[in-house]
Length: 141
Image (cartoon, rainbow, N blue to C red; front, side):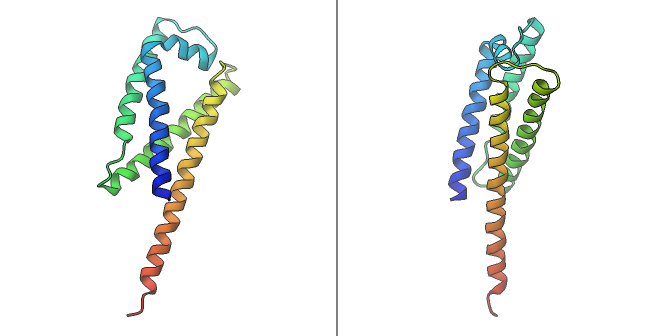
């Protein structure tokens, strides 16, 4: 079950991030307005498009290789760091900098939920592996 849960989580996060990346590439001013409630100047639009390109590359890099356990670990590290930092940064923009469009706090919540799901899935898998190891040690000689 945790493997199925992870597969669904991978697909969900990939779809969300690909959608965000494409919107940043097509209309970064709209994304800035919806997230931050401000107008995007030319520089912000260029940076927004660059972030869209980077986000597409990250999604491709984060897609785990089924044949390698190291890929799954890299996926977790990358997604945990990204979701934790982007949630904190967006929350900072809203709470401290008093910026915010209609999608700022939903984006904070979404990244926090994804982070929580990643942690919960990791913990479930870790416990399952620990139980499996304990059973192997209990086998009588």
